[in-house]
Amino acid sequence: MPARLFRCCLLLTLICSLSSITQAAEPLTLTWEKNMLRIHGELIPGGSIEIWYLEAYCRPGSTDREWRETVIPHQTELISRSEDGTQLELKCRLEDGVEVTHQIQATGDEIQFEVTAHNPTKTTSAAHWAQPCMRVGAFTGCDQKDEPYAYIQRSFVFLNGQLELMPTPGWATEARYVPGQVWAAPGVNRDDVNPRPLNSHVPSNGLIGCFSGDDKQILAMAWEPYQELFQGVIRCLHSDFRLGGLQPGETKTMHGRVYLLPNDIDLLLKRYREDFPEQK
Image 1 (cartoon, helix red, strand yellow):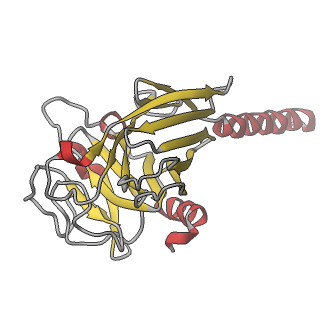
Image 2 (image 1 turned 180 degrees about the vertical axis):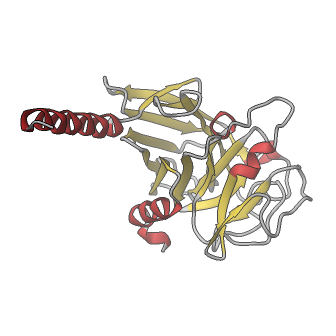
């Protein structure tokens, strides 16, 4: 091959490589409307991931109680959205007066959540945990109407230091409401979680996630602090963050991540440990 032609081919290869890197680094974008947070991206199966944000704020003593008695009514509003769609600010106002601000930012392969809860009242708040409900049916390729729970076979948590596909060891089938599965976080009172079947195992970490239908990607969520991991009944997965109640005038902060990564569990765990050193 003539030297000039070789240099042209080499330059073309370099340009293509840089173009691929740039494309891979393009951020995801966000929208929020009617309590539904949507993560948009060209590589996402179905084009977007929906998170019911937030489904509920919850009182303690919830494991064996009617759900309507656990939920603290709230209203959420969109405060701002950046022009490029990578940043959102939301504000929740709970019926008991607590105010919760959510700063949400999208990058190339993750969504970052920074949450601040403040109790401006003179009364103690019973808000102990909250539920971001991540819908994963389309991502897992299991959104067929006649197979509502097929997605759990592509979903995972970590038990005893190992990734376990669902249904995991210790799978429970009895509770006030069935089906579903709950894993109470370390140190969390097992009387204070979702009234669905409660697994006997404590998670090794705060990650819950699933594999895409084509096995090329991983979608996972984690929070610190977290109350529970939860496999729900509307093709959803939860890492539910913990508030632990709020005294008058008290402020607390929580942070979370949604990861959208190549199918590489070692990479997922590396990123998780960097983002959540508290959970090592």
